[in-house]
Image 1 (cartoon, rainbow over the protein chains, first blue to last red):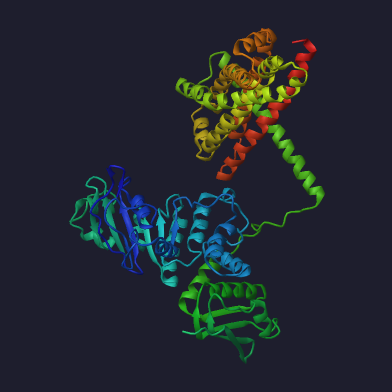
Image 2 (cartoon, rainbow over the protein chains, first blue to last red; image 1 turned 60 degrees about the horizontal axis):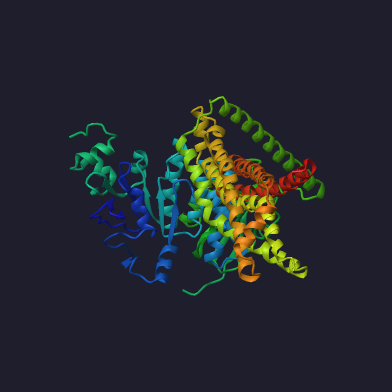
Length: 240
Length: 378
């Protein structure tokens, strides 16, 4: 992954299994969000390939790429709601564009998705009229509008109070269990990492590559790499 | 798997309990029954206390089924019926549980707006008042800012002022030049049509020179700058408002008026008269081209005639106008930018309003100044 000549991360090789809650972690500026942008097809890797069910995204025809992307849901850091649309219209837009559903079905689904993220009744609000935390939840409602197979989260709990962050974590797990979705999360919230992560990759800014991968709890307790243990123990001297 | 249309069966095991057994595929593309219809069919609603949902025979299901159950649970709650969904698939049950976990906060739902003409008139009046208030507020803050500037207490960065000068001056030369030459040519053609009838073609030099210097030079420059620089000011300041940059300045004790508005306004006020002179010259040149190419007026003749027609007074009249226009365009741009809302569409609206108000201000001020010049004989 690179911006121009500036290489952000290299030699990345990992597999996200179906049903995983996969954590991308690492210190600030190590390229977590950039990696996520590659995974959702916004940026082309400078070298190498990204496979979805064995299909290489960047070698696929545009139509195939569209179909792959249709299976994604993405929650951006601050919601990224379209400001000229109400919350209901924000969620309805992908439904109108990519499904055959009628108006009343769409209205029902919008109500359900908003209720799922705890925003029942906020259909007619504009993004500018709600708080940042609410915008984030509304962004999640939009991300799950099409019942995606893979949900990507960019720093889901940043800017949320501890209770909302915990609720969001629970929601992520619920969504995985009930919709059978695979979840990929960029975060450095330790509480979240241990609470929801089933697999992970640790990016290091200095060496510019991944230095660990696996279950975060095991990494915390058994990683061979002191940098990883330090990160996962809040910088305190790792035991053992 | 072939699609089986959604079906349900209601049975009464006795007492105030009803069982709804779901069957078939409850997926998109199927016609679903209405939840209230389902409740209605399950007997007189006042008798039921418990509704057991049985999903043993349920085929495929998707979000629409969850949404159906969610609405059913809402209706049941409203009718005081307890809902037992333990017979449904776990995934669907959990989603409904999540959706109902946070009940709707009272009073958040927006009511239908009153659409009567009286309400519309009232809203329009309030909005107009808000705009006037915003205008007065901005004018007041600007006056205070100017007085700080005169006392040498206004704080802004020289680099910003330089950038603003560069943007409002040299970078505007190509577009102002192009438009001015063309306007000069248009004036010459329009005049030529009439003057030819009297054999007085030479007088197009008077017409173009006077028209450009007194009126069109200042006016066209101002309209270009309203569309170019006024809109840029509004969107820059509007985006800074969205990013909380203006709040950050306030928190540090900087006045956004001093820091952001003054350099931009000063730059435009200084550059407008210069641009106006440049436009005058190129407009007259455009007229000369038309004269030389189509009316056989030599450049020298044209020059002499134009010199005779235009006095220093006329040039000053145009320059004073352009300075006034500069104030108006910069003020309209900065005002809408700094009062912009905090969203992408609000920034768009700010830029649009900046251009529209700017042009309206220009034309109104032009009319007033022309009348004023007439009165004082300038």
